[in-house]
Image (tube, rainbow, N blue to C red):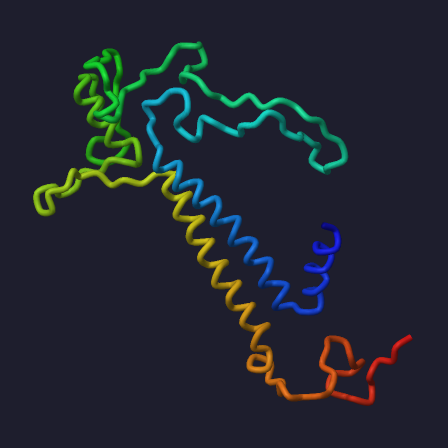
Length: 225
């Protein structure tokens, strides 16, 4: 596998546009993969599952990971212990777990002692402890912030839904699209170099970077050693 790796890298060394094109496409694939994973996480998002969800509590998962110093000189392999489990506070007290999805609320359990409090907006500093109200606002706020909007005109539920996960997905999708078009642009500059650079495609003279010591002066052609 060494020869193909060497070939595909050396073939683009003397062609800046092709070099940019292949690397931007690589960046596109990376951003697109992250976007696809985020879309998958959005599809399975369920905060009421205390074990496998949500994504931000999973952390890195795997049997082993290479841990190195900032300069990459030394390192070691150590196990990975993701923070899976029921959410607890600093004192080890289990935090309230409100079943958000109606279909997965298998039991009609009304947790007491859970308070929802608002910061900012019309409901600033307002708190509710009634289980039904707590569950209502908890379900609506799981993907974003609650805004008191006009509900009568469009018969909406008055909730603007977004989240760090949503912005994460949107950002990576945008970057992937931007990088993809960058790849197309630089690839086109390589395929149609005569159009972009004004070089006659039927020109028989040698055209390469660094062929002449002085640009445009054929008398300064470099001689092979």
